[in-house]
Length: 265
Image (cartoon, rainbow, N blue to C red):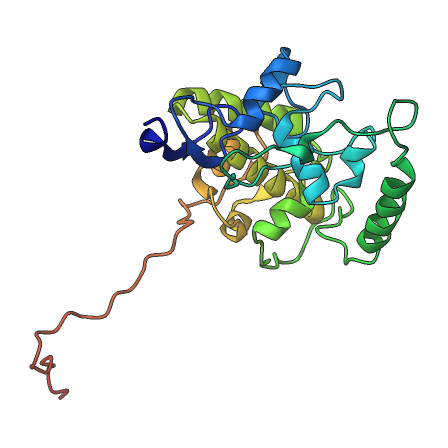
């Protein structure tokens, strides 16, 4: 009878979508609770979870092995946070991939050599990639602004990069987020876009970011404009600037009829 009441829903701990009976957590997370009781913010995913002796949550341990994340597997100091992908679990999943990491100086088989090899390969591939928004010379006066194609890939490329005036702008963003009642996920998204805007400012080499460059952001333009204005980091246009150009719609016509137009004289 218990199996008849099983439904597919989100696990209360790891949030993975899985078939659950009357309990709110999946089998893997229930076993995880038996071994780890310390609930803190996971430094990798920035979510409040139960952490193991590595200081990581169960979802991040799975992601490290799934994505070959050598930086976090080796515990490299300064490794940037990562986003977690929503996963679909398996009924009665034993969650073997969430086992403790084997690092140098710990117990268990020595796998650090394998992760060091992967880290060298990943860093070699990163060095061969083209630079993204390289900082320019501060105080230069550009003759004109060049539009850029900024996408979610650009946001990820500058994630974790130190940018000037970040602490000041971040404090203003937190104030605005509290005023508007933004959720935690929306705050993370806005913070990533704010870091991108500050990276563009550094690439331009100007103390004040030209307002027109906000049009290049993939999203969140009005919020980022408000943050930069309050932080004193935006060069506003003399007249209010529309960050979302008006969409021109074709004239509506009645089916079966041709739209009438005036004959020119």
